[in-house]
Length: 168
Image (cartoon, rainbow, N blue to C red; front, side, top):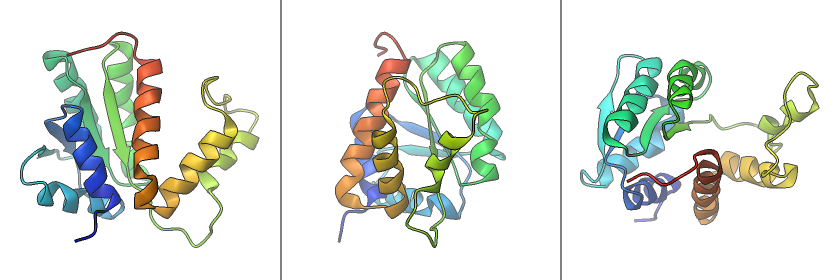
C-alpha cells in the first residue's frame, strides 16, 4: 500500500512522542483519520463534541503532562473554532499543535497566501520568508506525499522558534 501524507504525519507525530490527538472529524481531515486507524493505536484519538473543546483539551493535556498537545479540525469554520483554545495555550506558554484540513480547490494558486496583500493583516513572522510560505501552502494544497517531510519539518521548526525551551 502506498504511504499517504496522513500516514507520514501520524508516523512523525508518533516519533515526536505524541500519544493523543483531540478533535472532531470532518471531510478535510479524513486522510489523517484513515492513517490513525492504520497506525494500530500508536496515537489515541479523543473525539470532542466541538472543535473549540478539542483545542482546550489539547491545551490542558500540554499543561498537565508537559507534552505537546495536538488538536485537529476540518477546514473553514472547524478550523476557526480552535482559536479560543489555542489562545488559552498561548497565554500559558503551552505547546499545542493545531492540524486543520483543506478541501481540494479548483485553482492551482495557493490562495491562502493572498492575505499578504491586506494592509490590516500583520506581516509573516521574520523567520518565515514569503517564498517559503508560498512553497509550504502550495505543497499543502497539492497533498504531495514526497513533500510531507518538508511540511512536518517546517512545522517543527516554527514550533521550535515560537516555544522557547524544551519540554519532556
